[in-house]
Amino acid sequence: MTRISRIFATGALVGMMALTGAARGQEMDKATARMNAKSFFSGVPAIAKRFAHQKGWLQIPAPPKEKFEKNAFMPPLSAEAKMRAMQSLMYYNPFSLKQMINFMAAKKKAARGLSFDDVVESLKTKGNELNMKFVGVSTPYKIIRQIYDKDYPRVEIFSFCDLATLARIVEYAPEFIVFLPCKIAVMEDRKGNIWLVTLDWDVRWMDTSPNPNRIDADLRKRAISIRTRLEQMMEAAATGDF
Image 1 (cartoon, rainbow, N blue to C red):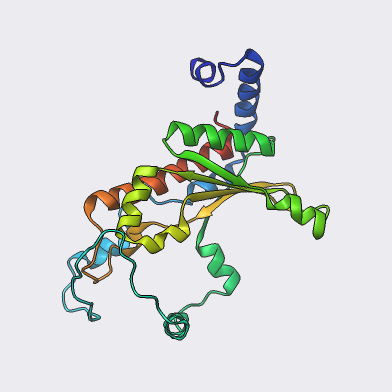
Image 2: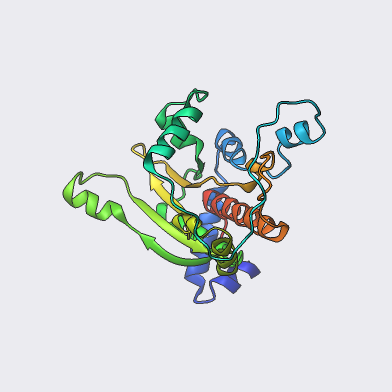
């Protein structure tokens, strides 16, 4: 109650709403909780351990170490070069396009009984607690309902940012600005279930890359922290934790 009172000091009524939302969040079924728990792996990837001390494996030649310049854009790649690179990678890829999009997303299903607004309130509150500043929201469903489908499910896209980390990331790779600020979408599906979805980017996936142009330890730590906090925000929203 102390925590709720501190956050919702504007009145007892708002505090009671928070308690109600938290109680409803406890109704999450075990299957949903297990599914949500698998959306983020906090340890060291097994593949990194496997190759850490291996000798005699085929090594793909890596480019040389490059000089790092802050806020310097790399030369653009042609559309043809991108197409050929992706087609080569797709040769070993068993996924369909829809499955690939699912691969790139991290998502959690909200507990039964939580309203859309309950989920959003929890998301913003946890973001503020974790120093992920709320910087905007997009509500495309309002226009979609007017021009396409009046019964289209509600979907809102919320933007959050750790400004200090944003500055460091864009110094390292200005091109990364296309992914910023960090976004978490809250969407109701056709069955009335509420989902939280974000882009699943994790620098630890690339720990086994032979490329010598790695990010420095501090920026790596910051990037992992962002992904961890996004996970904590979605978990709080999915369970109704105010």
